[in-house]
Image (cartoon, rainbow, N blue to C red; front, side):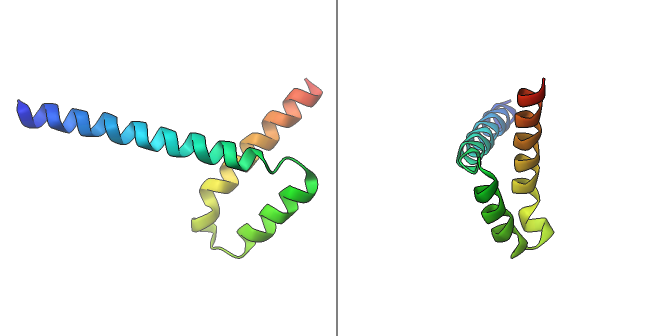
Length: 73
């Protein structure tokens, strides 16, 4: 039973760390909110493999969609 409890605690601690990392990254990327800043970020991402840039590109797409919906909704 102790092992199960430790496993569950580790799982939740890891999930908290992942959510914090994602929230921090979202906040940092939100600063790229002008067309010029977005182009700079895209140039940076172009220097990396699609695998390396996938998470950041997904966040930027969600943020762009959210902005579009907010401005046209």
